Length: 432
Image 1 (cartoon, rainbow, N blue to C red):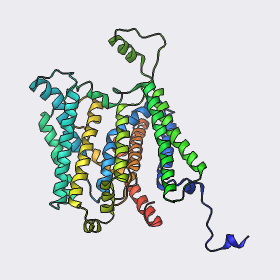
Image 2 (image 1 turned 135 degrees about the vertical axis):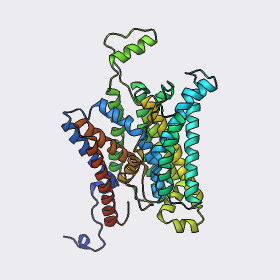
Image 3 (image 1 turned 120 degrees about the vertical axis):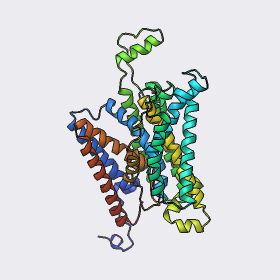
Image 4 (image 1 turned 60 degrees about the vertical axis):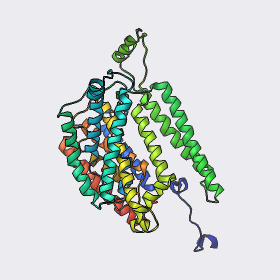
């Protein structure tokens, strides 16, 4: 063996994973998710990993995943929000009443008017942002612990929604509004492939631009083969998902009704897929926007700086009180967006909408790697956590597991995720 190899300063050979620069925690989550899907697929006799079930899982995950992206910022700054499910219910009630009562009956706007959906959504967003900002003001400026403020909100806002609707189910909702619900709003196979191609090109451009930025600043870059591998994985993930949702075919009876509504006859043997749901595209847009905020804006840097050391952040000139108001206002707006998706999927507002969503959202963020001690968290991790949570619940339901035991399993997974997080940080001295 050469002296160079035995030298104390000799560089050890990097592993395949290290060369690709993949977060080992993220890789572990993906591995656990794959194993989970395979187990449920075999337990359900091949029904879990079908285009229909994957499409359903996607639209069921959106509502919780959107709120989980905002919960990351809240937990990163060492706060918590227990009121997101109740705030979702209130925003849903406001939007439902706007569509069914206020606009058609009080303001004389015909049901089906193109104004109804945007005005209703705007009203829900205003309510969500206002209540979120109010929570942030109570926490940031009055010094009330976020646990207490949002626990009060958990009890208050759902019951405000109940009084607003007199405890009744409000619907049916506007047809344009229902486009955000999933199966009632898809873009079809052709435009799905177009967007899939655009998304793939954007992902590859992102890798290339990141590599150029590192080179321009003199930082080490991955080997070209590693970049090609990462590009291939991202391309396969994007285009593979598009292929799966396009493979879920619209039932013949529904196709026939669609053709009859246009005064046409369904051609013999004609079939088509649903394509990408608009709600999933909304989640993608939110994920991109939140990632940009987290990594490329002063606001995002302030969030993680405050979470890492609140006292140092305040001494450095960061207005941590106003920052708290902004973070909770942002989460309130995301709750309103989730209310759009959840109520549109149900085609009405129901009193139990969003029940226990606060626990699912927090669990998604924590399972996705957001540290409860603050300072660390990722948007993509929270979305993956939401997917894992929904897959776990849906898989157990398909297998026939009783609802009480499902909650036992979900609670156990949450505790286990926190334990793994603690062990991981002790071994690595922090997150990579």
